[in-house]
Image (tube, rainbow, N blue to C red; front, side, top):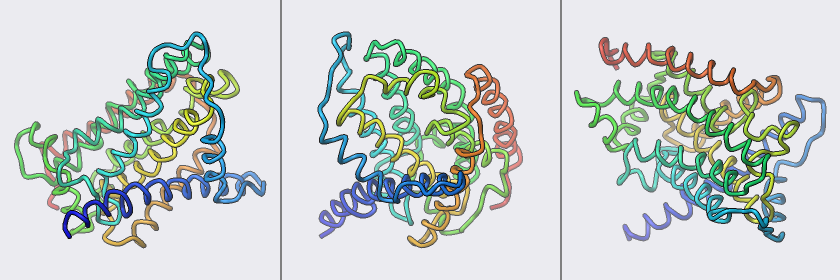
Length: 314
């Protein structure tokens, strides 16, 4: 019975089916809200389901100049995003949390982005390579403040004096500690909390940090040569990762969620904030992105120093 429960958790709730279904619904909600903010009707909320089904039904075209890995990298990207989702608590449950640690979660989130940019390099298309270069450059900028921001609440709640222990500590222990206490650590460590929320914009390439796929300049960037199911997997990577990062933000800084209603309430609040940024922000140049995120890393490190030298009573 225990094995059946675990298998159900991995594949149904809160596993694969739940993550994909909820991610597509959240993507449709974002598009709908953005449309209403721009005085448009917008597509129906279930439009992303149609888009993905349509793309999977279309032909995959491989360019003559494509290099090894052109077909594999989109698969690696979407699988990495799904694994990260299975490791992230959603309404108090995470199917793979018992056997995972924080550093593995960070790794799969980074791999899902890196795989997309490697796909751009493998396409050998000038627009694709340009988008990939921009994406890798942007990753170098935002990964440091993101990791620092993640470490702050981890160190605040893990009773250990070793940085290795912080990184390899069982993720389930940390997330259970947050959810049982309902602690909104964003009020205790606001600099790290705000830094993490801002890095979400870059991780899912929302304005003003959508330079890798700027359609007005490089016609989609790294995804320019992709069609059919490969393009669907690239789009699904962004959609799933957006949902996973919102769930992670809830678990890290917004007190977790002990039931599904609280989880949806908090993640929908974050979705609204991300949508506002998508609508009102203009795209930054890549050099401005670098300056911005290195400054953000310095700001987030202030809370990292605080939590190490002056731990707050939690």
